Amino acid sequence: MCGIIGYVGTRDASPILIESLKKLEYRGYDSSGIGLLDHQSHLIVRKSKGKIKNLEELLRARPLPFSNIGISHTRWATHGLPCDENAHPHTDSAHHIAVVHNGIIENYAELREKLKKQGCRFLSQTDTEVIAHLISVLYKGDLKLAVQKAMARLKGAFAIGVISKDHPDMLIAARVGSPLIIGLGDKENYIASDVPAILDRTRRVIYLKDGQMAVLSKGRVEVFTFDGKKVRLKVDTVSFTVGSAQKEGYDHFMLKEIHEQPAVIAAMLKTCLPAGRAAHQSGKLKLEGLTISDKALASIKKITVVACGTAYHAGLVGKYVLEALARLSVEVDTSSEFRYRNAIIDKHTLMVAVSQSGETADTLAAVREARAKGAKVISICNVIGSSLTRESDGVLYTHAGPEIGVASTKAYTAQLMMFYLLSLKLAQVRHSVPVRQQRKLIKDLQSIPKLYREVLKTKTTIVKIAQANSHFGCFLYLGRNINYPTALEGALKLKEISYIPAEGYAAGEMKHGPIALIDEYRAVICIAVRSHVYEKMISNIQEIRARKGNVIVVATRGDRQIAPHADYVIEVPFVDELLSPLLTVIPLQLIAYYIAVKRGNDVDQPRNLAKSVTVE
Ligand code: F6R
Image (cartoon, rainbow, N blue to C red):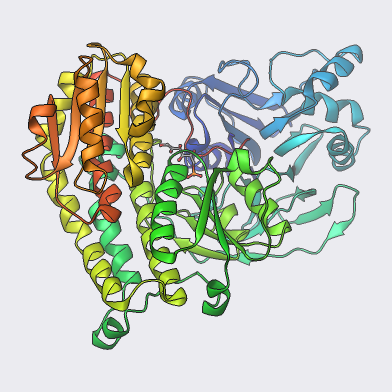
């Protein structure tokens, strides 16, 4: 994972590097660091464990000199503990060359042993340090050639930035697998892990491709293949803007983002649903970015959804919706499993790749695998211009705005909504749903933002329930049918921010094992809204009560039958059961949030996590 920024130009590098680095903190916050060349070409490195604010404190205590060239890094630890020594940049033994790195060097152990025998002294446990030493032993006065030779010896996925005290106007970048872009400025140039990190400095970018390296000075950028051939530069002008996110009075970004959901969904519906009388009559959806013809969509035989984490749970809900409306067979897989299982897909398969960040390494690999086999890929993505959007045939943007809280909330419900819209679109081209039913569905979807506001109004009750249950050491989440993925998502939210062990289960599976967990020390959250599996859920709840489990039920407003079976009831308004996951997840997000707050955790940046998982 990790984020990289590099600068070469005429201005003071360190404030530019630190400000841009903060925009990459979503990629990891275990440690951060900066490396510069001062005017006497001394290589100066400062690094600090923890978030970038710790590095800023260090720089206030030990300010950096003026410099025109530097690299910086924010880390998510892969090899070695999150500590000062393992923070990047890493240098060679002579302290001449500094390297920042995003990715994993798979053959680092073998290289390390060889380099040690050649006299290199290692100061960290990272895989990255081998890159600095390797470049150093290969260096014979030509830094570009040394990096080029080093690339041939590295295995894995990586993006790197390199500076050397012997080349005070040269910044070198290279990539395989991990993203890296070059930003072109006026008498200054940048490297960065993503576009938004440098968007307030330049809009002219070069997307470095796998197997390419770049040599940057303040007035020039050249790109080469790893065998030294010069590549013609393709400069893109980025047109999108990135909203900056503030907490706006909320205690945490996560809470703010939970409250943004009605507005996010309302905006999506406004853009995609038919407006005006004529459009309303035709009922035709506008899914901008779909870019696959109706004819091609109608000929699809199968859909494969790939995603990770919360986005995977959105994909699981998507399966129920696509199958119900488009009447197509849908399989859903985590990207990390899909990419290694030689899945049976061909040109009649539509892949839907779901990702908030668009930078998840496994999802990108799954997409490449599917396209190589001839499938068309549509991505459902939030971050404009991200790697995933550039590698897909069509992109459905969720436009949820920047999601800063590491635990995904508004991106999830936006992904869900996009699945409803995509399913409806497929239903239209495949004529699988009668027009009257389509109109009813559109009307029901339009009511969702209002219903969200109603759920959010019950927050006081949810806070009390969360506080009363925050002491439990284990939670079980149960749901059936289309709310089974909601149970998985509720458990994931709780785990990641409260650190309480939590399991999501299909309620029908409870008797096949998890029921052994139930006693008076467990809390069980059951999703039992009105649906064709409601009675089955009630039976499951009774089984838990019979074993003294503490039961919190998410139920349909006005359901009088449920109270005797539950310790606590959280009500959500009635909607058609197909749409219910849009509503039932909101109380679960709030429960996780308030339990984490009660436990005093860092809700927006929970331990061990990063917003974007850019290594496999
Ligand atoms: C959970 C969470 C993660 C992400 C997962 C995929 O709250 O945020 O599970 O959903 O890492 O990330 P994206 O959607 O960026 O591909």
